[in-house]
Length: 236
Image (cartoon, rainbow, N blue to C red; front, side):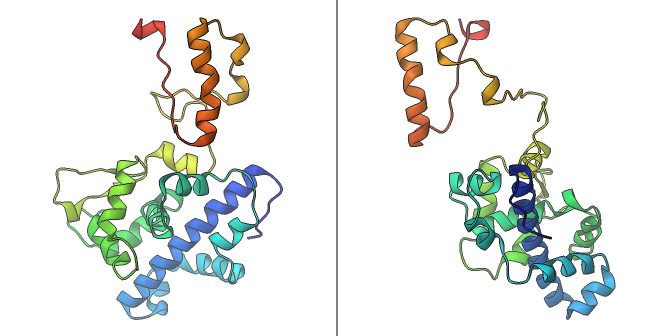
């Protein structure tokens, strides 16, 4: 894989792939320890070899090194900086989403956490096992941050906590990949900024116009991270 930087979609795609491969590498390392060797991993899950070949082609390059040479917007970097996520949290997010990119990881996860339900998605118990020896906050704390910010969801909240199963909501995963469909979710309509009316086109009274004029500076200062506009349709 060649880290192309010619267009924004390509940059986003390459960045996503680097993050994904770092999660794959971590999981393979954990499996190699649990099964006794990398050869045993490849014997049970031969599809992993293609990922290792791709990782080998990258050499020593990693996500952070590649980022330093990229200016402009990268969705994953913007998310990490906005929520003050560390690299472990990002890798954990991608570990949860492995099956979203390749369904063969479902069988791998099922074998790593044998349960009567034959679960294809990772449980908190499995994630804790795979990330327990890393420096930094406990896995449960990282999971809580991801949950609180809507980056993952629990599919069986009525189960004991260690048996909680996680997935990344489809709209979130698509956004991480840089794919934003016209309707990311049934309740959401996205309008690109260039299609919005300008402030001069708004018909508002002087008091509201002064309030509107302060918004760009507040957003630029990052004192405000979101803006809710209430209109006459529902709020009078």
